[in-house]
Length: 222
Image 1 (cartoon, one colour):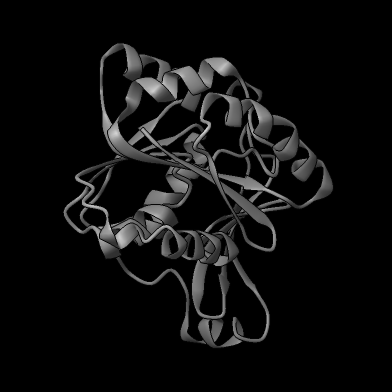
Image 2 (cartoon, one colour):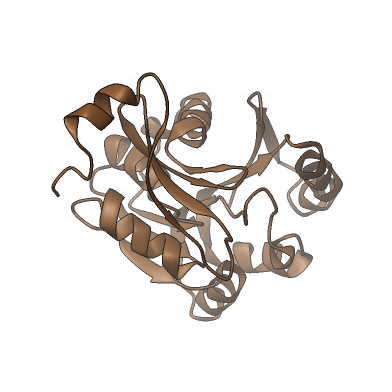
């Protein structure tokens, strides 16, 4: 893929962010592809959607859980964004069959234009809760399920429900691992995370929690 930026933009990005493209959709009023310290990132109005701080938080979580030791052959990524989690998994599990689900077709388009991974993961443009319910009915199973579902800084309401947790049960393979990324900041997002956590813990008594500065990761075994 040709570089979508000039050498001057790349050098300037180490001083200040270089916005290369902006877009909007029915789900996201503002999206931007920016060059930051020499790397492309995808941002919404208030949050980093892919690469940047999100990638660092996931990398810390994966190291804490020793992801590289797990022999995953299949993975489901709910909230694909621009593919930063898929890129991390490719580093540790190059042969893992990745399926990404992204609700926003504009985000999917920006991924294809600026961030496309090779070889390409399977990418489905669909709402996560609906896809999960259908996958559970079809008895599709994944050894790793990663959830990173946000519209800006808010988790879609359909995901903070017992029905969503039941559907997760249906797609996570026995002995598999589920990782759910939540926010601790801003305060409203942190409050939503803490409010739903007792429901998750009741459903999964073995729930483990790993915190970074702004993120909280829930994880459990199937």
